[in-house]
Image 1 (cartoon, rainbow, N blue to C red):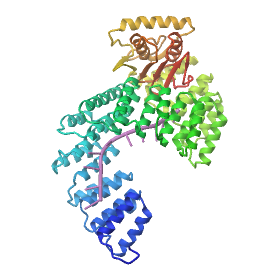
Image 2: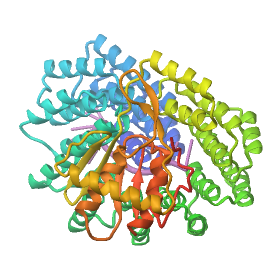
Image 3: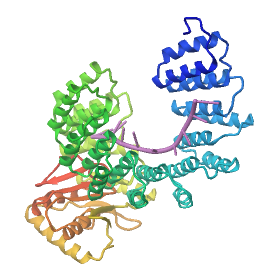
Image 4: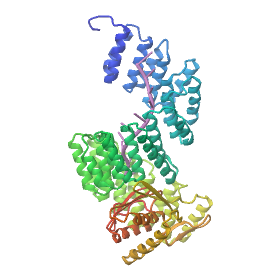
Length: 598
DNA sequence: ATAGGGTTAG
């Protein structure tokens, strides 16, 4: 039509631009832009708005903002489109600047502007600005607009201001599914940012409660709800609840959804049910890169290296292009099995065939592998040659290698490096103390102990949880919170006897015994995972795995104990601590004793 | 012509 020389109206041009926008066709869009300039209508408000939106959707923020500034008469939609363009293209700071400028120009924001700016606040964790926007939204008459309240509530949750979020939630006259999903997702995310395992646990439980209330309210959950709540079940290692959610997804017809399917794979994996994870993966009707990567990662974590690598080949055959995270899974599979040659081959394949630049995590896998098989000098060379600063994971796996292969000199050096990375981390101090203790270096032991006392480090919060049927039970080190504590003590005594008869020898572990003193305590019988284990055995008399989640890393002594116990009771024990998933079967652990133990 | 919620990481 344009080539025929017909003169398009602004309306026609707008429709063209929208078509380019939904096709994400920047080339065609630019062509239309050319005609717009030719006809001199780029200053028109609706044309400019459409151009701004088009360039934003095609990822070209510069052009979007340029188109915006050329608009002669910018209305609220123009400003909102430009602000949203900043959000979509990861430039929150510019979004804020535009918002302030808009207010200075005397343009009043509408509900679209407000929700947009609030989501920028989420990204920036800008609670101060966010609460000002909240006040502003009330002032300009959007105080009871549902999307606006949802956004404010989600922002408060993401910034950890739970009381205020809850107040908003409880005070809402109407809710939408987005409200519920924001509450659930918000609590799920709080689990990751929680200061300790205990508050993370509380957030998770709260998310599950909100999910239950949602179901009772009669509203139908959607894929967002299911993927969030499944993530919560994974973090809580709450297999029973996860299975129930699985049943509800089937009832609601969401089983064929690829995101829900992937979330199920991850839930079963993180609950230690690799079989169920694999089953969920096989049953998926379509799989994304993320689904394949999740399953490869799952096999790798469980020490099933061959299956992980086989799946990687299947993925390539299926025509799915792996990304850098997939290769983290592939390399860690090789690392677990000590397959040095394969690891190097995959590392080359990643660089050469897929043009993926190695990142620190890939090097970490290679260092972990060399450390596991005892090639400590080579691993150390790798660390020294790194152009990047070694991270905590690198030092931790190197330490595990040194301890396992009896090189206390290098191990202690690495542990001191780890401490300088995490100078306030209680667990690192305990690790270092345990290492000086077993190396018999008492002077260093006292020195570290003194530093600990001087720094007044908070006492370790050692909690474990076990979920039995519908309830989650908590256990804290040294404390007897449950009715059945006598039974727990007796059972632990019996188990200790049995383990000893099989050759278990207690090694003890360092800990703060009271507010002032740090000592090696010989018995670790009061550690929380042991209490949870005994409680679990007393309350689930049938066979089947015992699943425990723990707030901090497991100590070597408890780890060793669990290996013996898995033989005595002929049951599988799964413990997920803050660093690693441990699956004890028949005296062996899936981490092969390289799970960042204290 | 503009908005609010979700899945992968050793």
